[in-house]
Image (cartoon, rainbow over all chains, first blue to last red):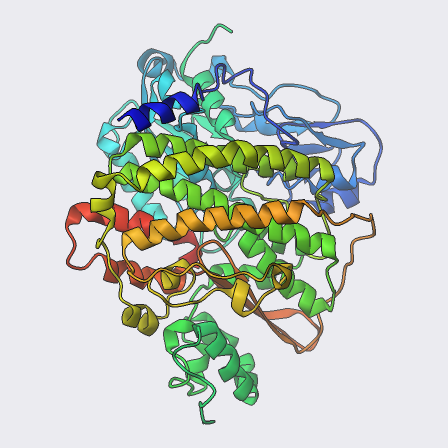
Length: 251
Length: 384
């Protein structure tokens, strides 16, 4: 007993006080900024392993980007990845970062469905569906609930049954074998419900895009409420995205 | 059929595979001419009537799609990114294996600083995952303190990987033929600080956990897999070492900087949950020592043009790396023009899933979670 108390004392306070203003350590690759410098655009576009870069004007689609940083390494004056981890949005188009624009990627409150603030503003229980992912986004969703990031303090938690959930979180590129299970899980969630896509794989298929093993028809049937990019998405990206979607924050 | 005197059950499935392949190299040509049968999940070796040399399961990696992608995606960066996506918690392990395959096919000798980064990253990945798994085991025996403390101790390790390479799970860090993020003396100093803070907390928490009667009563004699069983089903890595079977690529086939480290595997004998958590605890301490020794002497990084080679035609390459779960094996065959015609991936989970199935037999249903978590196998790595 005393030993346990000693351990608690030695651990001190571990939680991140403010999850929306804290700085991430080191060289995190978050929201990119693209300068207007002239470069060989064909070469730049051809470099990207997942065709996330488009030319004229140069833009990066964060829903496709694997954040490998190769473009920033080869064209350091053109593309720079900032440590801004707030890159989640409810609109797919907002994930596209264009050259010369230093604009935040954020949730547009105008287009968030009305009932989301009202119903999920104080409490949100989510069911996670790993639809053929590599497990990295799942690790980060897990980390969002550890004592440091502590998403539970905002009333956002993961539950074991879709019957208890307010929405589903999809990770992975959605393989053919998971398509039916995903549908069953979604159907079991009571209305009103939300769909959140976490990670590049879920948003666009990522490196697996176009593979015959995928069946992404589920996403054509229902509106997606939140896109959380990243490979894998950082816990702070996940927490801030969910908070921006569900509540009107005054910070 | 050649005589198989060289091959014995004592060797790991992969060693047996290499030996049997060497003896059947002419028959491999047959395999090359029918890649479709390989891709349909029919073991290539069974097609060469080689069943008695090695068990079918030791090589039948039935993936169609991921391997298929390796053929189609010609761009090396795409291939590396795909290798990073094999198992999200073994990013360094699989990317290092892929890099070794690629460098070997192209005849590139990676420089010392590149191999240093890989070895260091592999040991860091091992520490982070073992810490996370000890936390998860605590959660499954309802020991909240252990779950919280060990869960939070994983964070500084993976945050360091982010400081080094920009990604908490080391994606983007390892690249074939070049040093994407050189390890600097400043990073070494920073890592030393991280370990200084990590070690006392880890040691204190584990000392408490491993003397807690309520924890030990759940660990001991739970989920036992015997030596004979692990030998016959061919488990690898930690799932072999838990039952007295010494299988560790770091010591049997040392690569990168491991010849200098002279690694000695940590072996336990009971094959129960207790053996598995003990191995995790001790391997964290062992890896920490390796990391400390390595960063005391960081090789100098000299900026040079990345070497881009092209794969040799008509080659067969096999690469083995000890990931934190066990041996990772990648195998590639090229055609006349040097293009990949076959790429096979084997995650250690492939061998070890059956060990979990044997471990839970005759156990209470309430012990399933700790049996499962003490192995912590990969779905994505297995379902290739």
